[in-house]
Amino acid sequence: MKISNVLLIFGMLLLILLVCGNKKEPETTSGSLELIKRGDELFSKQEKAEALDVYKMAADTALAENNNSDLTESYAQVARCYLSMDNKEEGRPWLEKAEKIAKDTEPLGWTRYLGVKGRFLWKDAAEEKHEVAPEVDEAAKIFTELYDYALKHQLHDRAVDAANMMSIVGDMDSRIDWSMKGIKAAEEGGLRDWLAPLWNNLGWTYDDLGMYDKSLEALMEARRYHYIKGDEKSMLIADWSVAHAYRMSGQIDSALAWAQRATIWAKDMYDDNPSPETAEWQGLCYRELAEAALAAGNEKRALAGFRSARMYLDKANMKEWDEKGYNELLDKIATLEANIGGNR
Image (tube, rainbow, N blue to C red):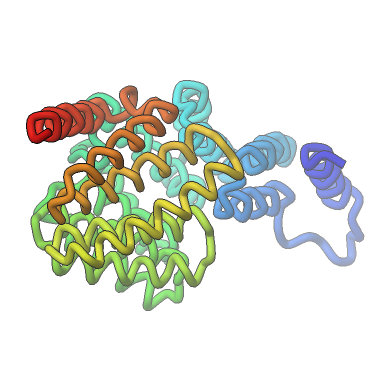
């Protein structure tokens, strides 16, 4: 049976139980909230298409129940699913629906709405500036509000989420502090799943600031938590990040070893499932391996790596989402071709 059919039956059963359940033992949780929780579980597993279906069912159920807070959450999460699936414009009307009904007297709905609105502002700015983590003042204001509000209402996981996002969109001087706030809150709240992205963002902030030894330490810690969770793509990205950190800290032999391992792993993933997403990470791993080879003085190996990187990054349409990085890659290929050709 298709998962969409299973989810439809699941949603119908919840509605039946809600309407026809034993009156002596009333339900303490709404049907829409149960669906939201299920959607959250699927989203956390990167099963975004399935999560999208569940969140839409949650919205229908919340409408039937006249539950405004659950409806706000459902609309917001539908928008977030579309955003995370690189379909921002299809998600925007759902965010507008959430915005029209969101109330700051409903903590669950209000915090969910703020979190998704801030993410749309971040993605809009990233697209405009061609940067992954640009400083976005408007988004930072929203995530700061979310952090304070969530703490006030003891929604610790959403406070940690806000701190994590501030480590991405806040000004560079504040990002380390926000990462530390998030890590402390996650550790105190037992929110272990948050520790991998929090340490990851801290590591890349250190990298941006040229603090490469601290970056390596933080990215190693992020890797530890990614491996505890066991998501294959996240573990690959963690290894790639460590390879980069070793290179930037001047430990080239280690960088080569880690980059080689990540590249082989990425190839296995691409061969199993050729797609723009797996092509992207195959290309980025080849590029990191080439950078390490170049740092080691091996221009021929570096050129081969950069050429392979370009081949896969073309499949991933890199020019559309990182034009600056793509042009830098082309420049390196051209420079190495000129150098090697001149040395023949």
